[in-house]
Amino acid sequence: MTATLASPKTLLQRHPANPLLAPTSMPIPCSAVFNSGAVSFDGKVLLLMRVEDLARDNHFHIATSEDGVHFEVSEEPIEYPLRETEEKFLDNRFDMRITPLEGTYYVSHASWLGGFGCCSGLARTDDFRTLTAVGELSVPSNRNAALFPEKINGRYARLERPQDIDGSGRIWVSYSPDLIYWGDAQPILLPKTPWSRNKSGPGAVPIKTDKGWLCIYHAVADNCATSNYYLGVMLLDLDQPHKVLAAPRQFILQPEMPYECMGQVPNVVFTNGAVVMPDGMVNVYYGGADTCVCLAQVPLDELLEFCLTQA
Image (cartoon, rainbow, N blue to C red):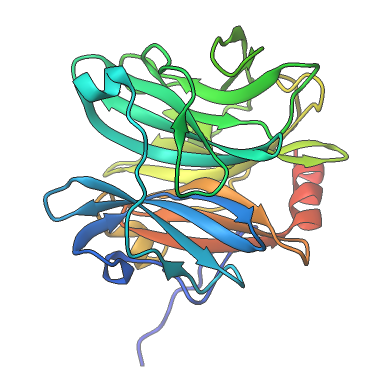
């Protein structure tokens, strides 16, 4: 009998059905299913997935689930709007995040523009069938925009990661009166850890609690062979979200399983969306190795307690 090494216990617990959605789950021949935006919609969990076909062109499909585990994937892709700059220069769009806000849904995304770099964009929808562009793109380089689900002191707010020329960067927060013009930006100062040496960026859309904004983020560090992605958690002040109230030094998920370590980009766990389920469980939907969609879970009260007590 072959011995099996025990996996180190992390706060987030993988669902035994992982990976939930793989290329073979898609209605078109494809090579990868990437990090998905996630939200509660019409009594179900909804995922907005980027699917890469065998020509490496992108398609955007919706998947819905009654229980947050078993998903039905739409046969037809949705039409995701293009802006003028995207029509001229777009190479790729990725990392959708979905925020319910003011009775509608906003989808933030990154656009890679040939010759310019990465920019952030925003669209809105009421039904996830028709989406409308909101303004133009940000200036480069900016990515990982995660819109807060309510105004803060009368202004819209978002987490983002301005990107250095070497691809690194850290998390900032900025504000807007109208979702188009953004400024008054401030950095979020997280503890320096060995697993976040290279860079860090927003992950899921912030979750409001009575203790503060609970935010799951990603970070990257090199080892002797590869770059590894990790997930961490932090708590931000409700009124001044650039202020970090708590940020444990420990990560809450690392790449360990074959579907996280082997794929288009090895050793990646990366989240764009977390949904608080009716029973208080936080479903964190994350991409494994830039190839499949996975699920890890933790009760909301345990995640909050960990954040406050392990800081």
